[in-house]
View 1: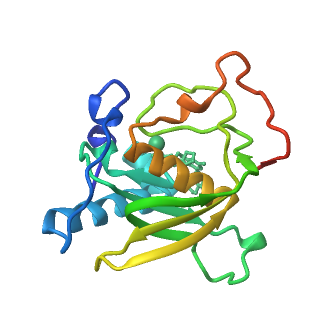
View 2 (view 1 turned 60 degrees about the vertical axis):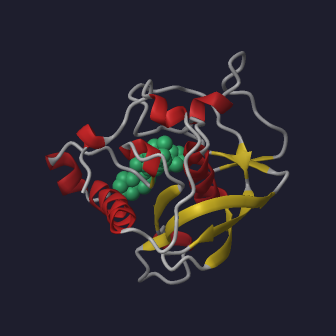
Length: 190
Ligand code: NB4
Ligand code: NI
């Protein structure tokens, strides 16, 4: 699995490249990439493990962040017991996106109240990152089958942050430089 030393930091050109499509059938290297990225997310969300190994917690990770310029990203959003129907479910969204494409997005925006952080960006960059509140994503699963999912609010923000990495975009590119906390009209604050 990956450790913080494996996470590529801002300034490395791989983070600004357009990632290459993943080929099917998946190579062993790509299968390992997927499982290592997901393992990082799981372990980073375990407070004891994360503290012991100095991992920054993550709810998403994209292949360019581990130096691989391929269209693959993992998303692991913990379930909030409060508004989750199935209270035994650990994750609200657990997904490996391969060759993902956002095929539709709502006009309505959503943004994280606390702003966004990125494992590849060591400093805090304050400001709102406007995202679409709801998106539809088409992607391929491990078998290469095409899948379509609709996500909203927090999971939608995470998916957009990860898909941005595959296009060489970082969260702070979206922050209004003149007014970082500018409020979009009719925005959902998550
Ligand atoms: C990706 C996210 C940044 C904004 C929102 C949040 C955390 C990341 C980056 C949208 C996507 C990683 C990938 C968190 C976090 C809430 C859930 C569960 C228990 C602690 C954890 C903390 F860690 N962002 N970090 N940043 N990235 N929420 N949570 N909690 O995940 O750069 O491209 O463990
Ligand atoms: Ni990131």
